[in-house]
Picture 1 (tube, rainbow, N blue to C red):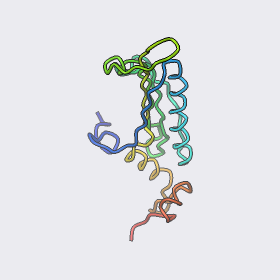
Picture 2: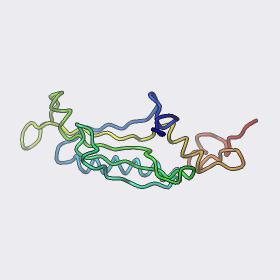
Picture 3: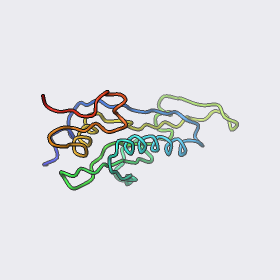
Length: 154
């Protein structure tokens, strides 16, 4: 298909991933917390986005629930996946025999993960939203870390 090349479909990429192991009765709250972190990061960068509750038929074998954050790409006039956040409940813990002691006895932990930042994809969204006269205007939230306001050709 037409969407098999480019920065969105590379075979290797860098990202910052969040992982959580939690007591079973707290996994839904932890899932919401991880999603909230992702939303804050995308929102602070000023990228228009939406949250998609992924349909059960589109989940991998291990995930019980998954959210994708899709950012708006003006050049394509559509939303594209930027991050995802999944709750695997006890799928991995059963295979690893990872348990937690609770008032109800020993129970399998619930495992979750979320993408804090997919570096390449995030750069695409920044280029799309912050390009000005052939230069990239650095978002305000990143300026204390970069020490500059623009990235341009010499």
